[in-house]
Structure formats: structure tokens, C-alpha cells
Image 1 (cartoon, rainbow, N blue to C red):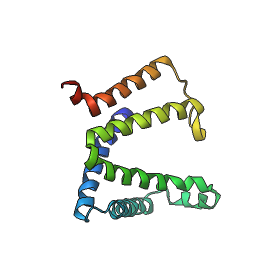
Image 2: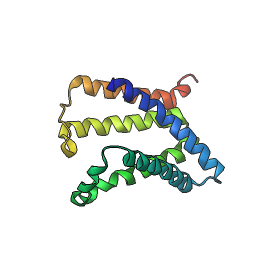
Image 3: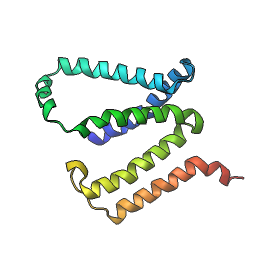
Image 4: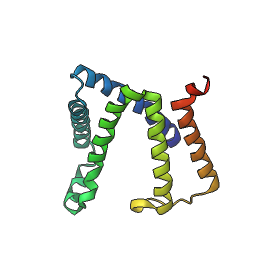
Length: 149
């Protein structure tokens, strides 16, 4: 079930990028404003869900959080703004392939280290081979048409 959910989230990412890129175009090419609107709608949605859920009590933990716990939102803004900027210039498939490649390479390193308390997972040959195949896929998605010439 979790694998299917991950695949579904993967389907939503380029859809989100396409919607946000269209929003950017409608706003006079403003990446910053499109990102802000996207995050405002997301924050409102999650705020309403948090208020309606049984997880409200978790707010008591806020004072104990470290400063870096709040950087996820900053990173999310950079990711969304980057996708809004890049998708019209390099295409959804090319951008997504590069994003997935970056995610995979970083994830392999983070897994190996057990980064931020996540489970440590070995950097095995099959995992490295899978990453190499993804990197080859990135090259084919972005430059494959040039091979036909």
C-alpha cells in the first residue's frame, strides 16, 4: 500500500508543477507570487486539517523544537519555486528526471548515514546499480533526441 501511495504522490508532483507554472504565467511571470499563493493554499488546507484532527495536542511540543525543524517549509518553498521556474524552460519530463536523480543520489547518502535519525540502510551494489540506471535514464530523457541525429 505504501508503495502505491508513493507512486501516486509521484504522479501528483508534475501535476502540481504544471498547475503552478500556469499560475505563474497568469500572474505576469511571477515565480515568487505563484509560490506564495501555492504555499498559502497549502498552509490553509493543512491548518484546517490540523484543527479538525485529533493531532491538535501535538502543538504543545512546539517550544521544544530545534530551529532546523522549521527549515522544511523553507526548503519546500525553494523546491516549488525552482519547479515553477524550470518546468517551462526544460519541460516537465526533463525537470522531473533531474529532480528524481537528485533525490535518489541524496537519499542514498542520507540512508547510508541514517540522516536525522532515519533508519540506516546500506549502500549496496544493487542500490548503486539502480541509481546508475536512473542517471542513464536522466540522460536519455534530457538528451536522447540528440542521439537520433
